[in-house]
Image 1 (cartoon, rainbow, N blue to C red):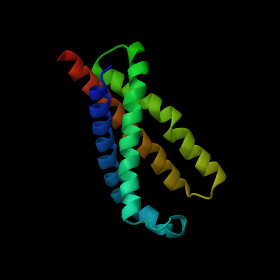
Image 2: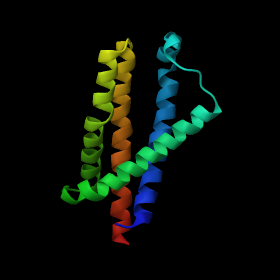
Image 3: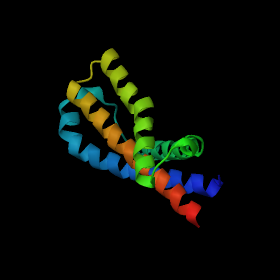
Image 4: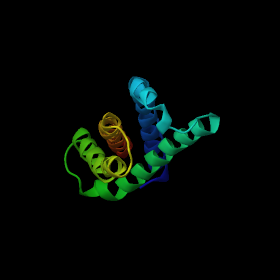
Length: 138
């Protein structure tokens, strides 16, 4: 696999996850505001860290796809949804459930994290697979 494919797929997946994350945060802000004592103060470095975290996640997802994608069958959308689901099952789902069991996080926040993580990972999975599929054709 070409490094250009990995970088392009990773960055685009990171941007897609970031955009959804911002939208999700806006929608969920009333729930977050009702539990203000749970959150650390945010600032410029925090926002930069969030952007870098999404980009790093996208790059890791694209790199992992170079191995896992070889065994997947079907069209690009099918493979993307399957890959995104697999990412969710090993990442956000267990993480959110673990945090919910060990910390006093309200259930509605945990449920939001679970479904937000699902959508975010489906976006990443579909994006990565589409970039790899389109660049393979060329």
